[in-house]
Image (cartoon, rainbow, N blue to C red):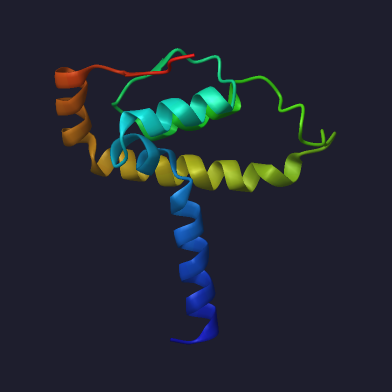
Length: 113
């Protein structure tokens, strides 16, 4: 395996580790709930259908982190957000039958404060 393919694999694995679909579909509900609670999200629950995309929006819909330096021009982050939403949308579509079943059986993922 050459260097460019190793770098691409590392980028893909790093990107998928924060993917909303991975956090909401393949991990316990408490993980997604805790992550959104830590980001001070204003979302009260996340529906399981297209949960990765909704999870991404919920992470953006929260109080600013006072511990991090506020950057005036954050336009450089847009490609990351777009890639995250596209990847989550594709993965959410692939697991749609399972998430419809889980939504019907278990309901939405609740975010406990």
